[in-house]
Image 1 (cartoon, rainbow, N blue to C red):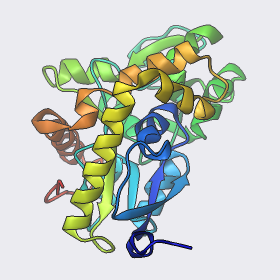
Image 2: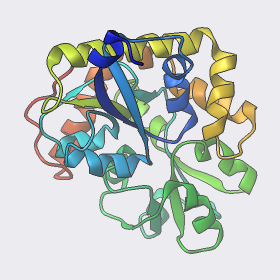
Image 3: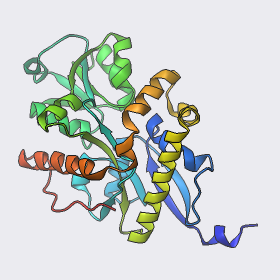
Length: 284
């Protein structure tokens, strides 16, 4: 039997990636420590580029997307909680050989998706380049097997490529930090569809998500243990380092720095003709 409260709860679909940082953020909710009288959540777990594409069709009520992908969306509000920013670090271009930026411009580079923030950032640095779209998990192997000359890696590969004896050719987060006088680099954000949710519902979900993130940070060891099922076999120390990089104070609430960094990246993309004009950014 269901209680009246359960029957009255709004069912929503929430998309996020199969990655340790996203799992860490949802730990409080999934462990039943952070509860909502308003929502029954159906989790949809897919890689970030798949979620970007689903967002174009408004297939999910709330979803993680690349900050870059927001340029192609309509009728979405950006949640202030749950975003991933890098502080002087971010996606990395890797290769089997050391090379200069001028050499890199002549390479075929594997990218994890056309709408990923990493791809936009690399375009801001290199301009046009020859790219090959490959699932993010397979990029290091593609570099090692010479299917591509270099690879743009996200998630744990930012840390683990050294173990494969691959060189860090370009750290896009460090480039961004210098280019913008210290702004954090915007990578992943969360958005809610205003086609399927009211502003009040969006604000209630943002509060629920924020509380879950805070709970994870307050119970870090347990949250990392939970996140390990999305760690693709990586040891706990690697996942703990990765989570610490991308779940922090600005994840709890992006604040003015977060807003300004998203605006800055989209403006730079527009000025260089890389993305459509974004007339307005809506924040919950």
